[in-house]
Length: 134
Image 1: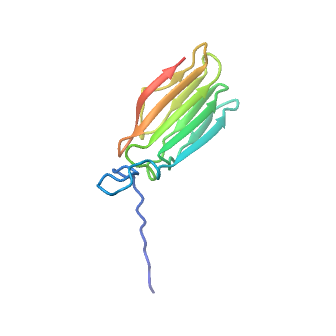
Image 2 (image 1 turned 90 degrees about the vertical axis):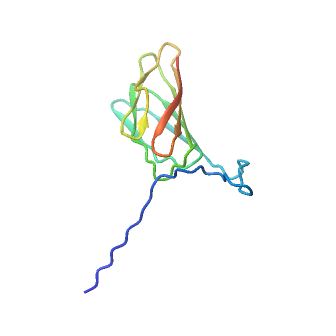
Image 3 (image 1 turned 90 degrees about the horizontal axis):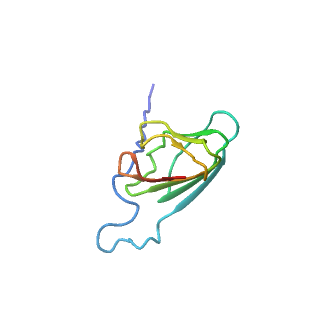
């Protein structure tokens, strides 16, 4: 009897997507962008993210509350960005759950009904760097 055990290791990258040594491409030509659009239905809706681009833009139309679950770090590189653009009525909520977010917490929309929240990947976690909620 033979047993074959194979292990595949997928981990986050602690280097950026672009080159950092002389002669490597650091012009932005190799960077990729991803757009995700989601509409929140009634009740507890959520989205699990697997960011795999230099910049991932997520547009969410809020009906009540919407949760962005623990984002994967497997395909993430240091310096990658997530930009969340949320819209909805006053009092609608955008929540973040999981250990891979370093966030200031739930975003509750006010009378203007807009939120833009930006995260950057630091090689281990998605760290919130900017938040505008109106």
